[in-house]
Amino acid sequence: MGSTVALLNQKGGVGKTTVTLGLASAAAHAGHRVLVVDLDPQASATWVLGIDPDTVHLSTADVLFHTRAADAIIASPWSESIDVLPGSTDLQSRESGSPSRLRTALADVADRYHALLLDCPPSLGNLTTSGLTAADHAVIVVEPSALGLRGIGAVADLIDDVWDAHNGELELSGVIVNRVPAVSGEADRRTAELARIVGKKAIWKPAIPQRVIFNQAIGERRSIHSFGFRSAEVSYVFDQLWAKMRRTVN
Ligand SMILES: Nc1ncnc2c1ncn2[C@@H]1O[C@H](COP(=O)(O)OP(=O)(O)OP(=O)(O)O)[C@@H](O)[C@H]1O
Ligand SMILES: [Mg+2]
Image (cartoon, rainbow, N blue to C red):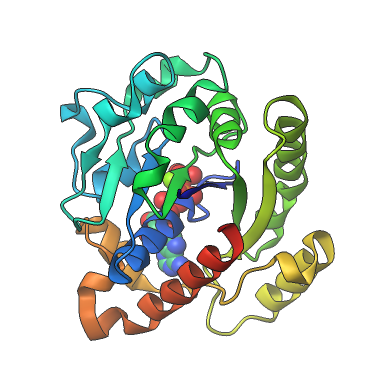
């Protein structure tokens, strides 16, 4: 029975999708099966995973209402080990609905996967609330910058609210630091500040470095592991983060 993990932050562009896809890539590399659940109306994860969101018949938007997850899930061309519950622009109009509906739907398919990774949109609205209600674990993705840390309190508050109102199983299980520049005293100071806010133990190691290969991977709709030696460094980072996730969430 795979654990359900929501990757979130209301701040846009911090790397929620990059981290979700990097973990999926590492899981497949290790021979583990994962489901990527795209909760973002932008449907970036779906598109990068090789599926055109405009052509999908049923999406997460439908599952938030009545559709069974199994009817909407499609295989990613990346790997036999990666399935996708695709996102679509319909999610924009599905900002309402029962928050527990997704939880019920995902529970039906959880035994097929080692983990279910929920790529949340950059907001703390109903879609993210649905994601957190469906999840056993919340992992916050942050950038080590002043603006990157500003919204963390609001994210932690939403996790508490959802735990309180909808999902007593939910835990804040970790914080992943993304886009760490090669040399920067500022980033080091912000990481230290983050440790004071969430506790050192909550910050997963290793942090993810800033590298152009991530932009290339997204542009070419390829997994990070498909670049061979050119991406060996970042593939190894994600292999370690996937191992950490398996230890933490199982
Ligand atoms: N470690 C990194 N190094 C270099 N570029 C990165 C890194 N992480 C993410 N990026 C780039 O930053 C951009 C935003 O990343 P991504 O889409 O993963 O963020 P997001 O948090 O999912 O955004 P949104 O809030 O819109 O969903 C992408 O172009 C991606 O390639
Ligand atoms: Mg995203």
